[in-house]
Length: 156
Length: 117
Image 1: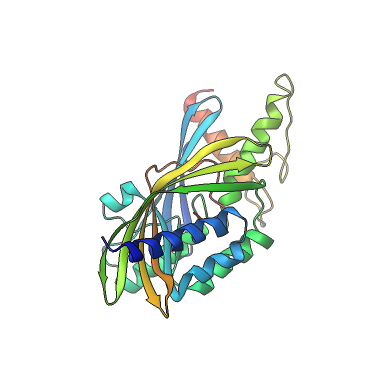
Image 2 (image 1 turned 90 degrees about the vertical axis):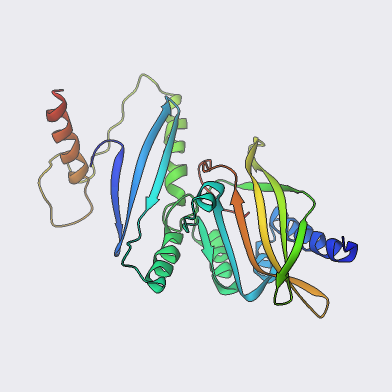
């Protein structure tokens, strides 16, 4: 195992979930390359080869749109996330990229303090390194369950 | 179309929404979106992008999951009371605007008749 590569991948995802959990959504798109892809789907859809996603973005611009919508348009009860992520399993991804699979658990904490295990699943990431900086060319969030409680506002 | 089944059209994309009651205070909503075997890749891509509008994270639908929850919470505190809001009156006649629940009332009127209620 390439320890350095492993550390860089872990660092990327650690910073990624920290930005979301710290409510720094404006930083979320910058973890992707300009034409980066982001999808949230279910294990069931993946197993059945069905392409439908809950969120499907094909660029940083679309991610910025979503942040803008969350901040200015959508109405939902105040809530925060807490991600806990596992160690990544890394493989070469072709064309200078690296593929990584990382498990995650996400707790959702409502403004009332009520805390629930909101989502579990795995990230399937494609990561590129430029000048030592790591970015996602693609992040697929694969939820273990098809059930989402109430709504999915903040990205995973 | 039937209490727990809705056929939805967004532009030229069809989807089915099914309500699945799981108890007095728990309901699931299942979305099934359709593509067609005649769709080329570009059309499929359009449908997948359009799906950002719907579902639990949908731009136009995410609040739909939360709003009934608020109502449920409010209703729980007043179980012996009744509240009715008439949107567009009480008739089921066709109207020339969309600011009315005539279609919904029409559905329930037909449903009662079919069910002999």
